[in-house]
Length: 223
Image 1 (tube, rainbow, N blue to C red):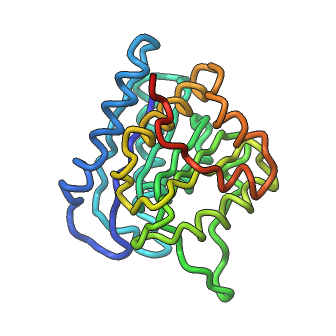
Image 2 (cartoon, rainbow, N blue to C red):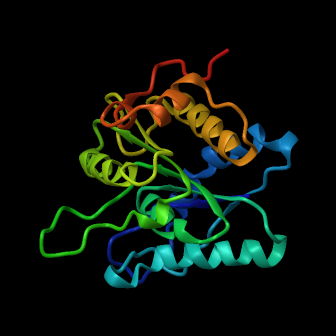
Image 3 (spheres, rainbow, N blue to C red):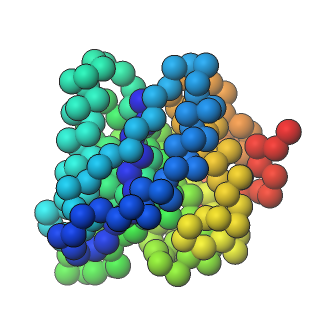
């Protein structure tokens, strides 16, 4: 099972944006198509509101609730949390749920470094396979912050890697085909113990910074 976690906003009590849900559709279709023969199910999480809302971390709480629902309805099945932007942070934060075996965070929104605040947690990622993908020209979320989080996570969880999409922005549209192929390769490799494509296997095996600044090559996944 894959749970798709759309983008959101830092502070808001409004209903989730229909555009954020629509933006996850290409990823959902790509994963469903790639995993159809394996019986992979893909569902979008419906947030209560669109806001992270500080310490309440509503989007992460909704992701955890959804993981509980998967277990209640489907039993002990491996689960991947796949999110974009604010949803990427929710996926990383909710990864401690026992059913989660992998996390895919696309252009994750992370808090700015603040020495007075606790750093974003990474202990919950231990034992999970983690892929972060970020465009180098992202103006909405800082790619350097996702690198720093990946660097901290890698210290205790070797199954962490991060790919950089050169010149792409927050929506990762310029190289969408490559990003979707990378996502499908990672998810199927993590869920079904398939062999990863060579770049993914190399990124997971490489020490920082190599495995955390792996360039996504044009044409990745092409025949």
